[in-house]
Image (cartoon, rainbow, N blue to C red):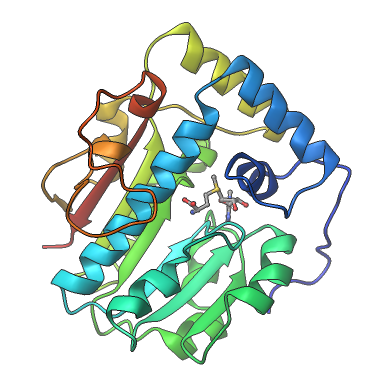
Length: 272
Ligand code: SAM
């Protein structure tokens, strides 16, 4: 593992733990809840965004597992274990699916080992998505993923934690160029509303974590360059194939979206 020198720091807020708090999880400390409460107070849609994102991710994994032959997943910035994790969704539909979870947060490694590595077909790798070669060539990744066969590469709510000068498009390109045709890319991303709410949201993220970008639709589309974006395109997460598969948090997409739910978008793309 690449976890030397890392340890859980309960005095500094972590993205993974604040997100866990917003989703109603218990793997967080006072310092995370404090920031989570700032989000809830100043950005009242934060919880809706977190749930809408998670629900779209679950639908996308089920979509891949039920409609394609892809049986291997690399989940980049996977987060803490929650209600319905990628391996549970994929293996529910296709039990032979193999999943590598990747996150920088040491707590993900600790909890992930217990909760995500539930079978021979899942691994948790502690590595930084900004160093894709380290993730791709990690022994645990290579043990599970056959890069000669199509892979599903998951960037769920992680690329908006990569600043522009850290080249998020280059990270996606790295993976795009190293997986075979027929591989899938799922991306969900904070979408700029060009309004005071998203400007403030970006400021809170930058202040707290030193990174965080709410990108425009054009900027998000540019991250997927060279890939075919599948129907329904880059859309607010609740509108991403709301009724294709069963999901814990699927709401059918029937009602009108809140302003907040439109501020997280999802897309599934395929390498031609
Ligand atoms: N993918 C999960 C989901 O969509 O429900 C979790 C999303 S959570 C908002 C973002 C996760 O990305 C956190 O667990 C955080 O630790 C992780 N993360 C942020 N920057 C990262 C990086 N550079 N490398 C690896 N993980 C990162």
